[in-house]
Length: 258
Ligand SMILES: Nc1ncnc2c1ncn2[C@@H]1O[C@H](COP(=O)(O)OP(=O)(O)OP(=O)(O)O)[C@@H](O)[C@H]1O
Image (cartoon, helix red, strand yellow):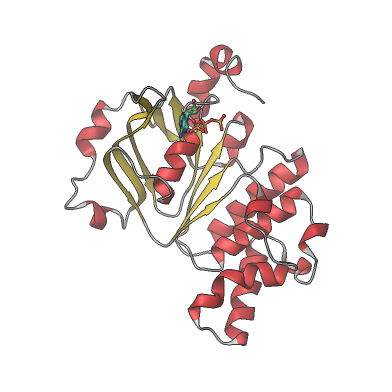
């Protein structure tokens, strides 16, 4: 069983600041003792993340899960560069893209084609190059047939797939995906997961980290990170993490919404 918990052993294997960029050729995402605190109304520091360590191999699909409020989204935002850690070190291969839980925060243009092409404005591409990149990204998420569709006619899951295409079109190497399936029905839920899997198998060396509190999604992942109370308590092969969570399921089920 390939599972690492607690993290004493992992700490000693992590690269130092000076060599982690070269290790980043193998591990697309690493964090070493990342902590994050916020000030409460009395001005006291309240810890949200405590010494979080993880390593995610390049080209794999990993999930980050744990009970509500354990710090998953905060850790993902730190890896995305949207928040700065209070302490610790991290490396994330670039370019990286963050896809939000609510696609309406990300899908902004009137048609699918215009929306996916939106981020390409700054790349100085020809029309043909733009069309080619948009077609490739939409094909990867299974949405090419929707090229001319007005975005307001799409389902939640279809909008999520368009949002993922919007990230892919910029040829990102790391996709950070925050609870994309929370508001989706079952068929949209698995449609979006399959779109991410297909993206990874059809793109060269793209790594995805997917935040979820839905245990059943783990069967689609290569690996998983499990958090509790601001700490990474296990990480390793998805099947091993699944077995370990199953064995503590009673306490897990009592703390998550699903
Ligand atoms: N800016 C902030 N100020 C105060 N508390 C915060 C702040 N950001 C996050 N928190 C708290 O930190 C904890 C972790 O939040 P986070 O959203 O990362 O958890 P999560 O595991 O993603 O939860 P969920 O599964 O419910 O989305 C929560 O208790 C949250 O209320």
